[in-house]
Image (cartoon, rainbow, N blue to C red; front, side):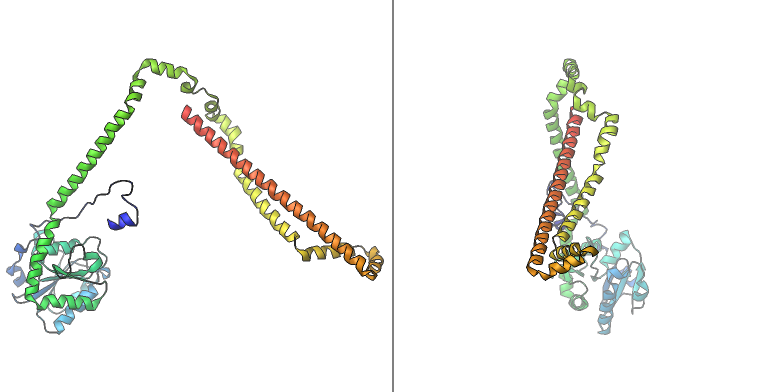
Amino acid sequence: MKKMRDEWGYGTASELKEWGRGVDMNIFSPERRSQAFRASKGISENDIVVLWVSRIVPEKRPDIWLAVVKRLQDEGLPIKPLVVGSGTFEKYLSKLKNVTCCGWLSGTALGEAYASSDVLLFPSDVETFGNVTLEALSSGCPSVVEAKCGEHLVEHNVNGLTCPAGDFEAFYQATRSIVVDSRLRHQMSLAARERAWKYERNIILQQMAENYKVCYLVVTKLYHFYLLFMQDAIIKHRDPAFLKRHLSSSEGAGRNILSILCCNYYFIKMGAEPFLNTSRGVQDLVDNTAECVTMSRNRLSCTEFMSSANLNTLTNDDDIESQRLIGKDDDQSKKSRRSLFFSSYATSVCSSFSNISTSRAVYYMTTILSLAIVFSIIYASYTV
């Protein structure tokens, strides 16, 4: 909800309500703890059951669960791993010492597995809400979960422990602290059940019903406002005299000039279509303008003007002799080249500005004319 409001902008134009998740606290209850269930799985009264409930796939981080349980067993602690679920990683978990794999469970059987366990170790960092965590807490089972995915359900050191994502050592130390301290385990079990009442299914459904009630009241008020606002128009349009008077007018009958022109197919086909196709012409004009500017910049190059001046003076084979004579007079040659350069420069600048001004004028005129036609069509559509 916070991310939807702060980052995505939901709820800025209208009120945003949460449709929460709930848990059946009769099915998931500490009262379902069963010594018969534990005995059927080879679990004694003094054994500490570390529980896994989920799909057994890599993104749920069963590797961390496996490593933590194995390390606790290697320390000689009375650990009994219990796995509920199935998946591609199950073949690795099944190799643990004293492990019990139950496959998929649901309903009261699942509630019995939760209540008969002592700690839920769930290192997954891809949970959206955490139904598994909520069901464990409702069953009185303390939970060790990833912080970002579980902190809205698990309060650290109260009804469980939270750890950073992927931090094996943190998950190990958290799980071990619950396993070795029976008093802490009992306190967290009571707190877990108490905190889970906030998400009791009937409470969540009642909250959602209240949200729908508010929505209904808002829609009803808007509808009454609409009827009040439109009452005058509704009364008028039910009056035959008003309808007759309205339809007799040129606007009501759609006989104004704009509606006749803009709503005529042949006019659109023959008159508007050629103009609407001028977008290609405008693009060509822009391309030609860019090319013109590029050519103008090239013409403003002193090197090119000097070379063109030299070429113009040396093109005629018949003028070789005169060129030789001009070469004798350095001052006269420099003066002629200088005058040719400045005259070419001035001609190029004037041509460039003339081309740019013309293209801009045509572009602006085309844009204004396009907008005028669009607004005319919109006006005609509203007056029909």
